[in-house]
Length: 458
Length: 168
Image (spheres, one colour):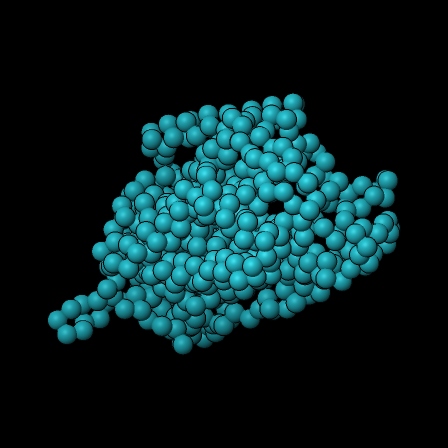
């Protein structure tokens, strides 16, 4: 049952620009607190640059630690946005309207932070230029195209550029709304940003076609990005458990699982923080909950395949690694938590409609998924490397340092801070999309009930 | 010439006004509609917008693919160092930057196409009313100075809240 209520355009503007036009006190306090975490994180990066990678817990043979774990996690989060937005746009799903902008912005910001991980992980950040970009014209030493560590930047750059432009193009009509509601210097800034948008039928038509076209273009890019991230692992022959063909789809579906869950968390937060009760409704998280059951179960299928085929081969290296992940301290409790948090508890609960329509339950279950999915990446990366492999000649272990933990924690603050800053400058729900939904809807009488229906364009 | 913008509170009245304009001999090529959100095509009897946006990603994809091909071949040939016994021009590895180049080219050209086809940035401005983004519907039309008074009456009679004029 749809719970839409008819709202005049003036009220939609006022509601969805409540933060943009006048930020409440909590916004300033939260921004200040998050800013301190971010400052701590970037100070830690400065220490790392100054002292070198010795300040991290990285040591032979575990040379990929929390930075890489968190990198995969944030790349995964970034998949939600465009995937969700693109598929819902292309399928003309009506409940997409309040979710698309937030999902797309989450994509851009999480991708931005994800892209910084390998740079920080390199220790000498500036050297990334030589490794990742065809830059060194004078000496003629070029990047190694055959390395997956070059494929990654090319994919992330394309995805980041495309997603950011996708957000900007869809923002133009809403910038005009802010332009029309501001005065002074803010009016001048938004006038420039709105580029003289007037709202002619031509502009609206192109805006809608652009939404479909960019969605269709970004979908294959999003699939490629996490596939390529998985190939950082899968094309390496040194770690047996990583050298599997299923990693690409397994990573992609895992990314979608954690990403869509992150969108749910964000939508619940937006409703609570910004008071958008009339726009983010139970029907929306209910639909997302149902979608998540399908996504999570598909992910479980790939996880099962990856795990069972490793055991079926009966190769000693594979068996030993699974034993380490599942039965050995400290990995077994983490593995158990990952399975419970990543699938069993949330999906079990989402089967109930009452849970899917409960803001509190959806907030905590979607958060739980991401705890589980973060642990999944940890369990793939660290145990895989800490075993002796043909090229590492050594057993080892890994204890993250305070510097690493500070950077990782600060990263979460960084993304949340950027989201709040975005919300201050631009609406997190597409205003014109909500208005279009209002225009296309009308109340119809079915039996004794009057329900909102959609006028479908042929 | 006189440029006019009639602002209507209700969309039905705006639609009726366009009918009156057509009856008075103005074709839908002469007037334009301004709205704060998308409406189904032809809701106000406006001319169907024609565009060539679908061509842009195709051209962009070709340019991007060419750039990707050039980049991968040129850089590997410039420093032909054999790594891990793999061929210098390793097609499977080259396909990835080439694919990303293709998609990036298609996306960048599409964005350029959206702006160009939407006639943005619109530096000329034109008659506009902030009430448009509050749900009002605007009809813009340009007529000869001598016909402006009569047209204003027609628009006001059709239900326009206000008719703005600018002489040029």
